[in-house]
Image 1: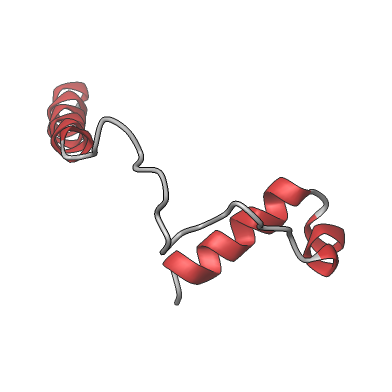
Image 2: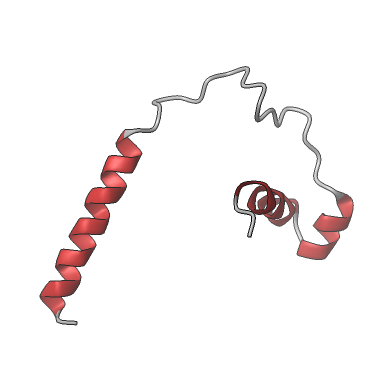
Length: 68
């Protein structure tokens, strides 16, 4: 691919991203009962396995929202 084809493709991808981001709400509504993380505590075994609470949470989110 040439440099200009790459730029054109990147512009199209950025335009798509801009459109998708424009559809997001300006704020996250409070009291969302479907995704309530208020009392979330990561599984200690996953923290041990993945090395941090952030990685354990990331794994839970991947399994929940991006199943294979």
